Amino acid sequence: MIGDQPDAAVRVYRINAANKTVLVFSCIVTFCSLGWTCSGLFVSRIHEKIARFGLHTTEAVFITMIFFALALFATIRWFQMHMTITYSQVEVVDVYSSHTVPFAEILGRRHTSEGMYLYRRDKSRVYVRERGYRLDNFYWQWKASIYDLDKADRRERKLA
Image 1 (cartoon, rainbow, N blue to C red):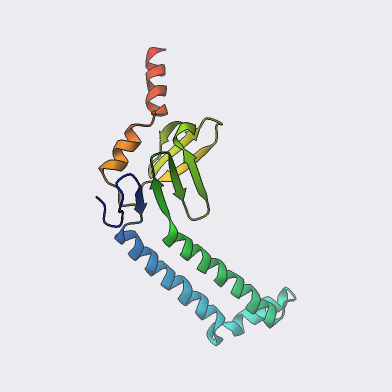
Image 2: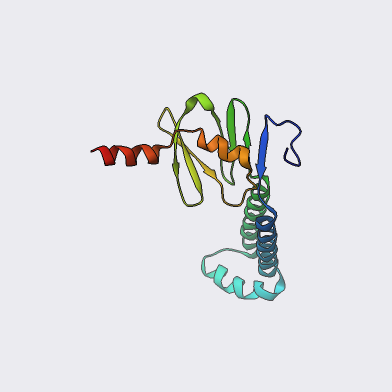
């Protein structure tokens, strides 16, 4: 059984500790640079460049705050990334998207360097990131149970 999962039928996979450390470090650098940009150390140089575009100081601060809010949103979403596998579906929550795919809709999978694409019967696809997650044997068995489209293509080319 995995640490934070009470039921063996539901598996939740989250980002591993090494990737969280890198993420925290990059967030600190991002927010420090935004703070430096907003502070008096850099604002005087920005005022000259902003004045060329016809913007005032309050507009410059507003634009900086928008970038700060977007950086905060992206940071929060990185920590919310997870993949949940249940009896009937897989839920993939990535930084900018969230998908729930019932197993009956999965046509097959294709490999990438950092994960795989799950192809649905309606020809749309969902990217499942594997790199950075704490994966166990249950995940690898689940992945092996999905029809491998790459292997099928190789087999067809070999027969042709």
